[in-house]
Each structure stands twice: as structure tokens, then as C-alpha cells.
Length: 136
Image (cartoon, rainbow, N blue to C red; front, top):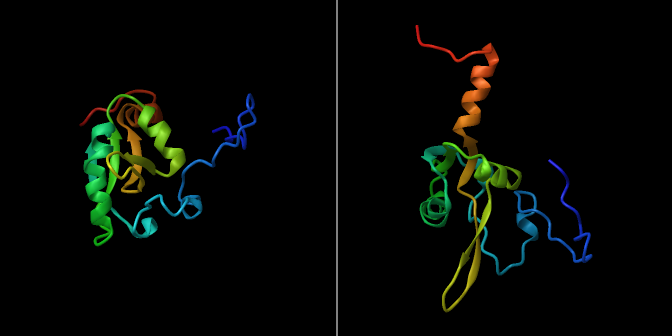
């Protein structure tokens, strides 16, 4: 994965560091961050199809639940596209939710602990023997 530059090469505008577990503490105080220690959470949910709706709704509910029960972190499995995996993996599964309304706010959601692409996982397993495996 290429390093993210400190500034935009065209405009020299500073680029903020990529969101990750290590950069959470450096976020401005008005950005809401997970209210729990992500390292102490355990995967308790496997969600197939971690698209925008899931990330904006269901994953947020699990994020709230993790503050009181660490057993509900999410393993997000995309069935076909690696796009969500490729976007979230370098960010440790973290993403920012923009809450719009009378009081706009930003919230970092940390409930997704693992992001997989089923298609790629199947290829890796099949590639180990050179051909797909069949049950006996």
C-alpha cells in the first residue's frame, strides 16, 4: 500500500493523516470517537454486504452496544467487490459518519473489526491446491 502524502502534490494543501486506530487520539475534540477500547472487542457478528446502508445504520447500533458489551464487533464480508475491504482495511475498519441535521456532527464508527471479500478468500483457498476442493 503506497504511503499517503503529507500534502497534495498539485496544490501543496496539507492532507490529513488517514483514519486509523493510531490517529484516533489526534482527531479534533468535536469528532465523536468510539467510547470503548477497540482492542478489547471480539467479533460476534458476521455481516454479509457491508454497504453504505449497513455502515450508516446497523454498524452504528453495534458501535453503541460495544461501549457496554465488547462481544459484538463485526466481521464484514463483501460477497463480490473488494472495494469496501480495500477502503476500510488501511483504516483498521474505522470510518466517519456525517450526521446531518440542525446540529451537524462527525462520528467515527469502530464496530467493524474485520473486512473480507468472499470472492478473494475463495480464490486464495482454491489456489493453495491449484484447483477447487470438493467435499469427500
